Length: 98
Image (cartoon, rainbow, N blue to C red; front, side, top):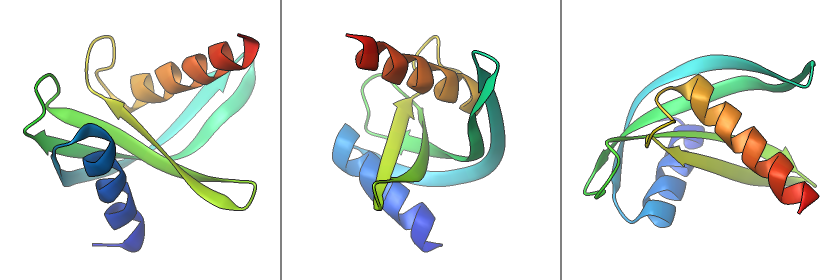
């Protein structure tokens, strides 16, 4: 297991209080307001012991020199890596305008 996958697995298990098993990685490119909002790898994990979700989508990025981890549970409307990225971007944009 790569260090990136291990860190994401740890982030999921810490944030969502369940076991995570790596499934696959997928390249996602998302446009938001006509600009590339995300161009990177999103990893899918299968969850064990979570009351609502069977999967979680996760990725990392660097902000101010520090690694940051985003985890999005597969709960409707989230049903794919692409929808997880869209929801996370919209949520972040909303929180910046509040």
